Image (cartoon, rainbow, N blue to C red; front, side, top):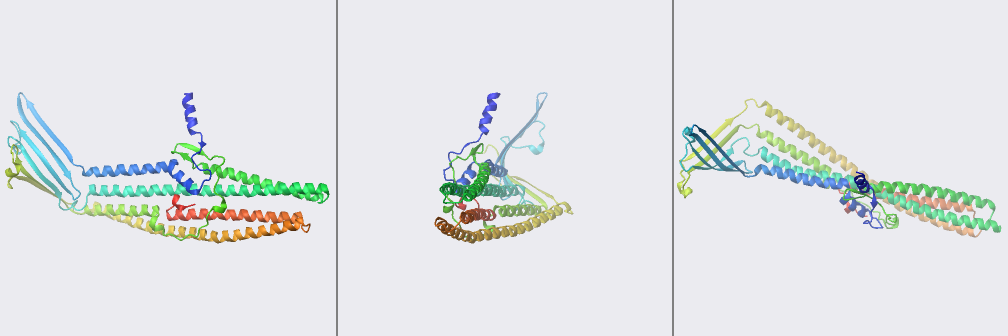
Amino acid sequence: MKYLALFFFLLAAPVAAQDLPDTLTQNDLLNWVADHHPLAVRAELQRERARALLQQARGGFDPKLYGDLAQKYFKGTRYYSVGEAGLKVPTWFGVELSAAYERNDGYYLNPERTVPDDGLFAAGLSVSLARGLLFDERRAELRRAELYRSATEADRLIQLNELLYAAGSRYWEWAGAQGAVRIYAEAVELARTRYAAVVAGARLGDRPAIDTLEASILLQNRQLSLAEAELNLINARTALEAFLWLDGVVPLELEEDTRPPDPATVRVILPATPDPGAENPELTRTRLKVSELEIDERLQREQLKPRLDLKYNALVAGGSTQPLEAYSASNYKWGISFSQSLLLRKERGKLQLTRIKLSETQLELSDKRAALRVKVEQAANEARTTVAQFDLATRNAADYGRLLAGERELFRAGESSLFLVNNREVAFIEANVKRLDILVKHRKALLALDFAAGRIGPAAGQ
């Protein structure tokens, strides 16, 4: 037992995601999640279920062989021997074709079962002339199965879109946290270098001793900021790793040297506003609900018709070498049956309930279409707004960079103070962090836009 427990422990233990590239793009992540996450694997199984249900529904039109044999013997006398075998073939048009062979004999055989000595062949059809002629439960079941297959595909896309949207959002939070660590790490190095220079200058008498205290405080503050950024990165990395699996079974961890692309290479895209009704699987699923209820309504309308079934079989004596020549139009058996409810209260009630459900679902479709259009427009607005914000933040960071460069020149010339240089650096760092935050916000807005339009996935781009 302990070896079995060890096996399951090792199976559940995370392993390094060595197959992922060192520079992990959004497409790389979404492709991996779509192929390996347990929910993605489970969603793929829905396709198999839909195919199985469709196959089951198609079985309603399978040809059917049958055979019956009944005999009775008592005190050496064969009372009767009744046997029949045949084939029934249902068709899509509501007509059932049949062929049968019947052979009966016996001392006490019912006279109506009397057939020629070599048996009797019958070939014919049965058809419903009123209810069931144009539509019946068997055809409705097949149409439902076909709709279910499409609905299952829509459900699969909904689940996959939600999964990829969550994974993509965590990816950009991780990328933003990685970029923030890089910014604060560079700021710490600048503060450490300046602190060393100020200490050296104070020893030589070029700088007042108070500058060493200010430089030391600045270094400590930036180290605190870096520590907080590293904590955010650890948390963001952990949240991202929750989406990394191998074949839906083995959890994975990112390699230590795995990094997102350099923020300078990430595109800022001005998006168009897509039509949510074209591709959104949520709308597709609701439209399929409407179609399914329309099938139910059609079937309920059929129930208002009377039941009028006709059966006809041509008969040919067995033993004939040329059955077509032995056929005579005067040899046949046929039957007709009729039934009809006088008030149709049950049927009319069911039809009314189905129509109410259909109206409710159509209203739900209209409401969902409007809600998704609002979500698409909101996401598109945010994506477009963050493009303008990103351009402004880029210019702002560049301007702060020029101010910092100028202040450093003045500081070297003795015309500025350490306090002013530090303030310029703090503003420059904050401007770069703000620019990075807007970039992350923009990429998440693009994800939200694709998600609202129902088209999220690797094709969303890097």
